[in-house]
Length: 281
Ligand code: ARG
Image 1: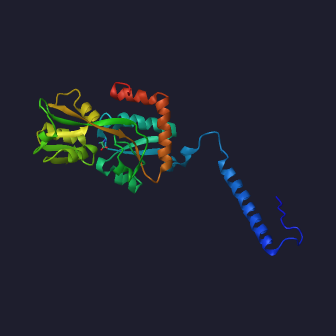
Image 2: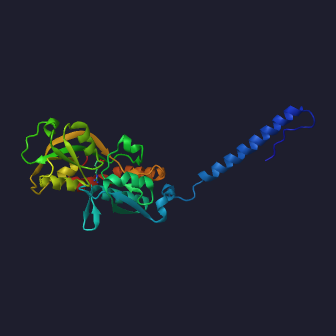
Image 3: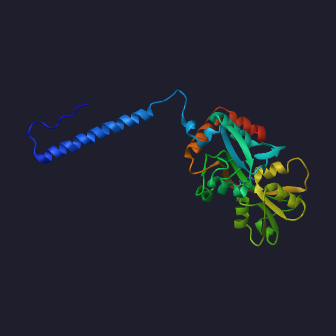
């Protein structure tokens, strides 16, 4: 490339400087355009976005989850199973990563993900909430949920005022706990490590009620007569999302892309039907 601005001595000194500056700017602009054109060149036919994931090195996508929350996640021997597990595995298939579930206490999931080094994703029936979004990123929503109030079978429940002076079991750090705090006056909240412990306490008569995500209460009280029933469905309009560190936006984007594909190719519906016995609305 040759740029000739200076012709003989016809230019004034200041004009020469201006011409020189313009020439330098032009050369820089051409060089920069050249660079960005180079990075945009596809290096192969395959999509490249998954290659930027930190986790690709190990080939494993590590997932933190409180695996006592059927039908989303529960342990069958030492194997995790459930809707979240199958969905995460299908996402892993799309990304070429092996999905490995690790059991964690629900309440510790966000701080542990934030701290880094232990797992890459939270898949734990976790509701997308503004206060949580200050700490971590969420993928697109993958399930619509509500709360439920569970009491001893036959209880005639009339409203939250009936819970004054009672003990309410909740899972620590959940939206069920938050609902009880906001909506029930004069009750004692009893926090449990997981939902199954809260139900065991209700069955044993150590608490009077449990507030918990509706689909999980439905599943836990499904076939065995445990002397408890859902006395009220609480329409909170929650949505579950997978949690990803704010330092890893490529992973969030890659999961969202995979999730979109699973919704269109029918895999999402298949997994939904497998765990809920119906198709999503
Ligand atoms: N959806 C509720 C929340 O986000 C409860 C989730 C509990 N999940 C679990 N795996 N124990 O707070």
